[in-house]
Amino acid sequence: MNDLAHGVAVETEPPLEPVVDKAKILLVDDEPKSLFALQELLSTLGQNLMVAQSGEEALRLALRNDFAVILLDVRMPGIDGFETARLIRSRDRSKSTPIIFLTAAADEMTSMFRGYEVGAVDYLMKPVVPEVLKSKVAVFVELFRKTERLRESEDKLRRLAAHLISIREEERAHIAREIHDELGQVLTGLKMEVTWLAKRLKDKPLIEKTDSMCALIDSSVQTVRKIATGLRPEMLDDMGLVAAVGWQAKEFQKRTGIRCRAKLPSESKFDIDISTTMFRIFQEILTNVARHARATRVDIDLALAEDHVSLEVVDNGVGIQDDELHAKKSLGLLGMQERALLFGGDVRITGSPGHGTRVSVTIPLRKSK
Amino acid sequence: MKVLIADDHPVVRQGLRQMLAVEQDLTVVGEARNGQEVVELSRRVPWEVAVLDYNMPGKNGLELIKELRQRYPGRAVLVLSMYPEDRYAVRALKAGAAGYLTKESAPEELVSAIRKVAGGGRYVTPTLGEKLALELEDNRGKPLHETLSDREYQVMWMIASGKTVRQIADELFLSPNTVSTHRTRILRKMNMKSNAELMHYAIAHHLVD
Image 1 (cartoon, rainbow over the protein chains, first blue to last red):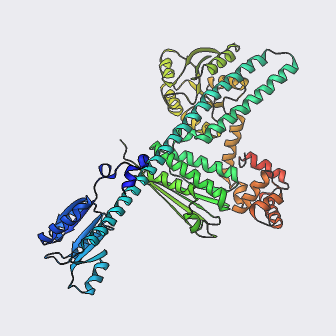
Image 2 (image 1 turned 60 degrees about the horizontal axis):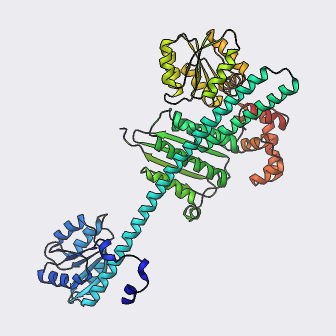
Image 3 (image 1 turned 135 degrees about the horizontal axis):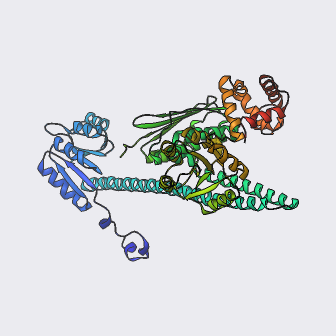
């Protein structure tokens, strides 16, 4: 170990203790003496030790803290260790907190089984062997830390993904606007100039030239429009989600020959971020249908309720398989889920071979300011 | 006729001005760069026809049309938009616009549209007129393509997109025989004789691009 401290490991992590919060360990025993002994024994681990002298006290503490591990005496007056463990485990927050039971050697095997039933991960006979206890607790502390770190990095990834999604959306909107408004209008102006010129020309070949120039400008305008709408459909901002979904469904049918039936609520505008999220998920669903489903029909049902907006898309294609759903590669599906999750929403995909795929999306609506 | 031009792009305003300058009976009496300016200008200048860009900064196009209609029911608003008709024209007309033109329209068309709406009429392009007529017709009876099954619709779409029987068979994992059977049934249901007829129908009904 010393080698590491003195060696080349300059670029590795800084010493753990100052940066990482101490892990909390709960010690529960009705005997003050035993508690004291446990504290003494575990103090060398350098973690945050909390103590309780009864099951009730332990429960109170478990309500407010996340423990790396709980050491629990089995025999206590009032709520005994087993009952305490059961109650602790029944709460969501502490349902997977590791519990080590401590019991006098006289206890029988049957109580041991009871202990495992209520969620013990280990069982130690009193008097405990200090080294054994210490190393076991240390393992749980380490596990706790890793879990924490994992949660943190998951959280970071999620925030990063959210950030990227919103940046991409902003950028697309910006580019679409620039292309459509600036370039499009310049082309319009250009066409007017050419027409003006054409009116003054008498020479037939020259007029033919200006005609073909006009035709070129027209097709450029159409291209500009197509690019801009592809980046971000202006109707989403202008007229809201309902109109945009209806339009997209028609476009899809026109582009793929797959019949689309859309059931839409009456048009109304609401939160643009949620509208965008829903719309992008919808597009992704359609892309998947076109790519994988081999469907001839898609039924779309968009519904607006007071507190949420929901979308259901059902196709009559080959049906997604469970293993495809869970495949690591299905980033598109993951992307839909992440997008919905950003707004507390949910995407559910079910499919059965030969009976098509159903995608249901629900996103709660934020209360209007 | 007194015309107001509203567009946030100088090039477009300039083009319009030039275009209208040659017409003896039309006078540009004001120019606005956004919805707010249109509203302000309207209080001072008694224009008869406003040529309005649908998408100006600030006020949303539909709202602006509605507001102008409400305040000056005697004046006509003609929308000149970058957006294709099929998306916005009907909405604009419903909001009270007297006409809807895309910026690709020929200058002559714009000028005749201005004259028409100034007289209290409405101006609808032939394409939009056809579309509205089709919608009316479709509302009366089921359009022919709605009589097709989903699969037949898909095959019809592929034929209309110019695909051969073999290509369709490959793409749909069907035998060429099955595709041919579909085709025969489609033609019978739609009362047609050839692929060309199908194509024409599909284009007219905007079933293909």
